[in-house]
Length: 120
Image 1 (cartoon, rainbow, N blue to C red):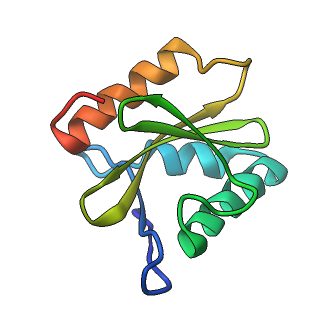
Image 2: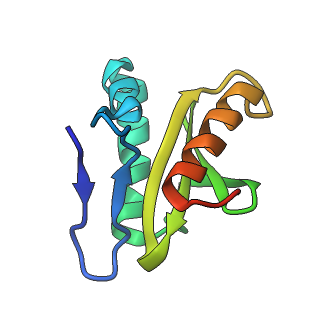
Image 3: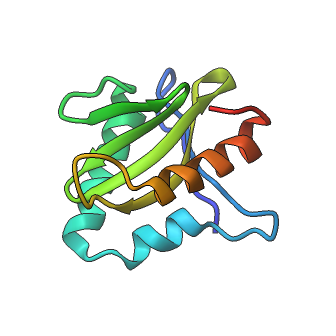
């Protein structure tokens, strides 16, 4: 299943990273979250979709170059903005501390390279 959000003109189009085989590991991770955590991530993505990347109440942080994260409740959602302002959600993981876990950053960077053909 591949979800594309694109509701309002000028809004941010949000897509989820998909493997060559058609799987969407980020969507699977989000579906498996408890309802409170899933709602927090969904609310942040919906706010960005409607109001843009500077949506009120959405916490973002630059990880490296063009690799960014959204912090929603106890979740980190890694993303990149590509041509045309499309936001590609690359990876999501439980927030374990102040800094993003090295393995999660490496996973996001690998997917970043697959999506953009470049390094973050």
